[in-house]
Image (cartoon, rainbow, N blue to C red; front, side):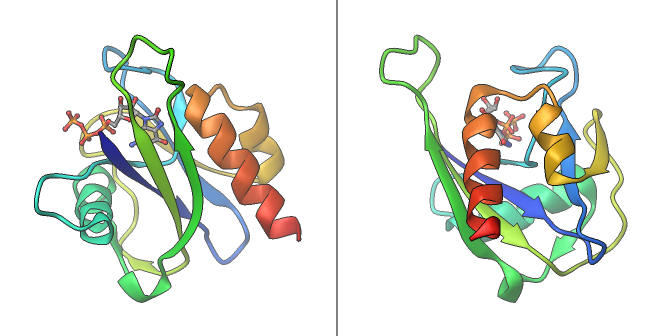
Length: 133
Ligand SMILES: Nc1nc2c([nH]c(=O)n2[C@@H]2O[C@H](COP(=O)(O)OP(=O)(O)OP(=O)(O)O)[C@@H](O)[C@H]2O)c(=O)[nH]1
């Protein structure tokens, strides 16, 4: 399953993380917001749709840049997923959690400390390591 996620960077340098609603897979954990790419959809438009549905933000597609990739372990019993992470620096609207859950703005150091699904640990590491270079 192909999943796309966004690392939204505010101009003050903080990043948005989304806490999944309880009851969903990985409920209560903090992730980069996004969701599954539907059939016949390209990854960038899937990401723009998901962020609008989930948070009511319309990302400026021109600012999307690929910045991370993670895949589930082949040995995992859970459905296999591949996540592509894109950074985004411009959007319209203010976040509202339309599908439950909550959001927050964090420093990279704070994101490191949040409880996250395993693939987000990898994505956060790639994102912030890349930014330091
Ligand atoms: N969106 C998102 N999903 C992630 C991340 N990391 C991670 O393991 N996942 C997993 O990837 C899958 C994507 O599911 P989702 O629930 O966000 O997607 P969706 O909105 O299209 O699903 P739904 O419409 O069935 O609720 C879930 O199993 C989720 O736990 C992440 O950073 N962002």
